[in-house]
Image (cartoon, rainbow, N blue to C red; front, side, top):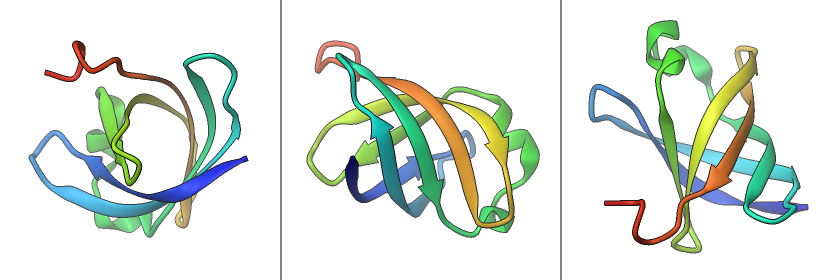
Length: 85
C-alpha cells in the first residue's frame, strides 16, 4: 500500500492538504482513498479532472468514484513528467 501526504488541486486554483492511501499501484494506475474533510470543497469541484501532487514529487490524475464527508474513493493514473505541464 502506498501512503503519504499530498495536495489536491481544485479547479478554482485552491490546494487542499490530503492524506492518500493507494491500495493498488499496478503499473501507472492507482486505486485508493484521499482522506480529508470533503466539506472543504463544493461537490461541483469534484466532477472535473483532479490532480493530486504527492509528497514524493509525482502527480496523479484522479476520477472520484465515491464520496463521504471524510474521504474520496478515487481511481487514477500517474502523470509522466511530460504530461504534467
